[in-house]
Image (cartoon, rainbow over all chains, first blue to last red; front, side, top):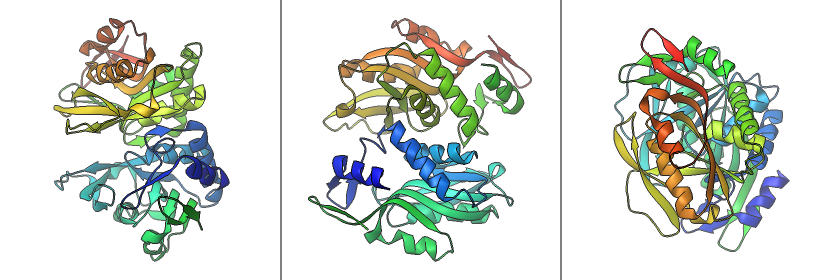
Amino acid sequence: MKLLEEKILKEGKVLDGGVLKVDGFLNHRLDAALLTALGKDIASKFEKSGATLVLTVESSGIAVAFAAAQALNVPVLVAKKHKSVNIADGVYAAPVFSFTHKTENTVLVSAEYIGEGDKVLVVDDFLASGNAAIGLLSLIEQAGATPVGFAVAIEKEEQGGRALIEKKGVPVYSLARIQKMSANEIIFG
Amino acid sequence: MKLLEEKILKEGKVLDGGVLKVDGFLNHRLDAALLTALGKDIASKFEKSGATLVLTVESSGIAVAFAAAQALNVPVLVAKKHKSVNIADGVYAAPVFSFTHKTENTVLVSAEYIGEGDKVLVVDDFLASGNAAIGLLSLIEQAGATPVGFAVAIEKEEQGGRALIEKKGVPVYSLARIQKMSANEIIFG
């Protein structure tokens, strides 16, 4: 998506350790108009998927997931992130390793809000190693629901997350696909 | 706002310790259509405020803040919550005590995204004791920006947060104002 690629080129900064800083419009300060456009683009890509629910994880995925859900006219389920693995009854939980923070968290959702009848579109801000995605797909599987796709604002291709998701038969759609990046250059695929 | 009050009466649950559980539409599962309507209502209330920025705190305030920002056509700044008080350069930070979790956190924003010229509308999901609100107002003050209002989906009047905010000269607007609640009854003001 041209609009997002241009914004990344203009405002994104590549930090040490393969981190792309886009907190001026996607993570910390949210460009509401841009995110609304991203959501509409995701919705148009998945309008025939029959999605009944958008699933994301707190907190940086919420805005883009919400914008997609508005356009699809379905609710969003926001998986909670917890440090502990002490899980209460009535929830589905999965471990997720955070690439950015080098910590392991648990993601969880209440079982009452996702079930067998649901067709679930996962939406997140980033796809890198795919760890968060695999955790979210595990929640869908535990609920007996059907994943219909994985949509992400920015994909960092080199970290290989796409292959993990596609191996599970889930189509991946990224609005900006970064093939390579360095302090001086960002190349889209 | 009738729509929200009806939703609270229909789906909200009052738990021990004065907690109102509304995670079926506001916190955990997000009713995108309802939240969009809440955002529009907040925007129409503050359309003449000249707001240049919406400020909220992760993660349960993000969706309603985003919906208000869409309608006002301004960006959202999402304050981050941290356990630690080790603050890096270039950020504004303030302590916040969480009523729900009985823990003290630090909320912080990057100084580059808020400044003297900004007129800031604070938007959150809940107003209870007002601790989060006071923390967010402190960030605005540190930035030299001007708070133009505090808008919240649900106010729990008994916990007194409104007075703290109004004492600072900031107008408070709540879409559903709960006067009293118990396991059997929720009374709006």
